[in-house]
Amino acid sequence: MRIPVDWELTLRHDDKVIRATVRQFNEYGMLVSSPEALEIGQRYHVSFSLPGEEKVFDVRGFAVYSNNSGVGVRFELIPPEITAEFRRFVNAFQLGQARSAKAGL
Image 1 (cartoon, one colour):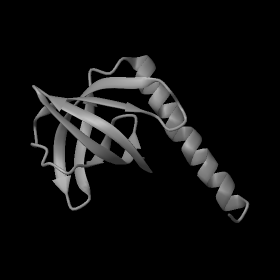
Image 2 (cartoon, one colour):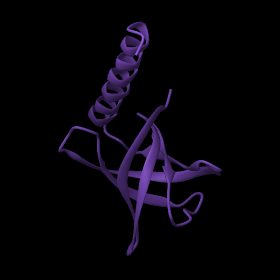
Image 3 (tube, rainbow, N blue to C red):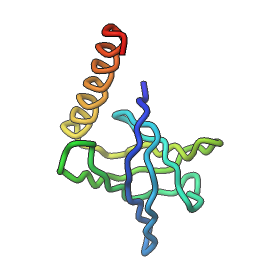
């Protein structure tokens, strides 16, 4: 399950650098809103930090689909320990959402 987010990232391909926004996220990839068109099938170096953390992730991904909300970027060749970090982040977000709903927030 993807979670709704709103944070900045950088995509790089060859000498081109694109600053964009992550709209949805999970351990497998993200939905990206970009001011520039991303080419479907193109591989990118993706750099971002999870909210509240200083660690910068620099991973590879490729554009797999496009819709009115943005471009889906699927991660590739991600070490299992990084995938686990992403999964923990998503699970913590979901747990926080469930707690807020139970509290009537």
